Length: 249
Ligand SMILES: N[C@@H](CCC(=O)N[C@@H](CS)C(=O)NCC(=O)O)C(=O)O
Image (tube, rainbow, N blue to C red; front, side, top):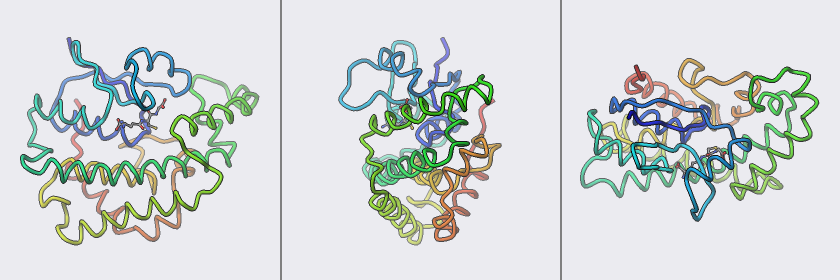
């Protein structure tokens, strides 16, 4: 039976998994996870674990692989594309992934805070199909759901300064890494580049034909100050997509 990817289309972590699967031509179908509403089902699927139940999850036969890094390792073993986890450099790739994870966790806080500030983004975050007037009516419930989501990930939104600093730290690390070996963090295309590229989703998401966003959510995820400051990294990311983001067939 063909594998199934449970994913959240706009999430950078899900994009990492989709990228790896597409790169390796790994046959799979995709099922969309809906945050909050899909929480119980997701928990049942992934079972007891230390941290929160998250997507992406790859279901391949009897295996339920509930982490983007583990999915990358699994697909790398079985896939057909050029290696993304080069032998002997796994620790380096892991380190870049950790840099991206930390910055993306802060990016998530910034995006949630921006969505809580903007009723249009809040309304857009409700699952379709739902008419506009229902979204407006349910806004207070949705606001609470968004706050619950922030708590799920242990995010404090009271002070955003530490999140902004953490995001910058990750971006600076990627900039320094690329200065040493541009255009790839390890000298040739690898999962380290994929992790770094997806971290930039929290600065400015890629074009809609690559990862579709509604306008209000896109605005909430875009940080104009960072867009100006890290224009070089955004160009790098866009080039990487052009060269290496194979689409699934
Ligand atoms: N360590 C996990 C983190 C994934 C993660 O944070 N996923 C979030 C993306 S926003 C998620 O599942 N959100 C949906 C939810 O919590 O319902 C991985 O790398 O796969």
